[in-house]
Length: 248
Image (tube, rainbow, N blue to C red):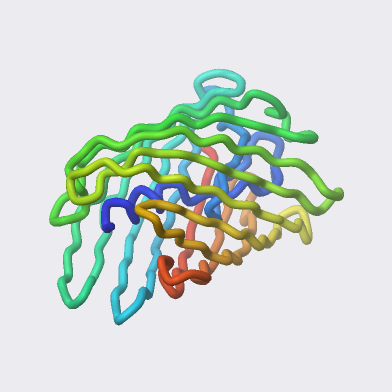
């Protein structure tokens, strides 16, 4: 379950409206942005820290989980997601170390200019680089489809659905996940969102209500924070996080 949580965290992202013409951070939240990173430029998106409180005193945490994105061509970017420090305390058994590493290829099919509806596909492979119990020791992978469309000049909807093969106790299991996000842009630099997200595997569905906000400190730097509230027994009771993103 620790490895699965690390993989799920790697998907954590939100398609917020473009604050600047060439900067659309794919965080915060659990839905995915359909807009690719700018061609020939690096975009770094970091979850500075997160903390989850589960059932029966179980808890998990992470620091500096970072997505490095590079624009390969219009509508295409390559991504690597690293988790330098993740940990969990399950039933009094505490383990912490380096997490798994995920490689992704993002292809925008329509709407790359950020005007109107947009849709993209994201293929990914997760490599078992985790240490000290932070990995199940197997290669995992899957495919995500994600899109967005405007409701008004200040409101937008993002939807994401994906499937994956994940390793649990050294056996592959199917994993299906998805969600719907509504974002409101209060000003050119301030936005907030509400999101419903669900992840189904091994006959259980972990559903959350996710709330958060993002603010630009300059046209290419975003700060964000939020909380995911568990709606089902399979989900953690609560997860809080803060993050940062920058276009270089």
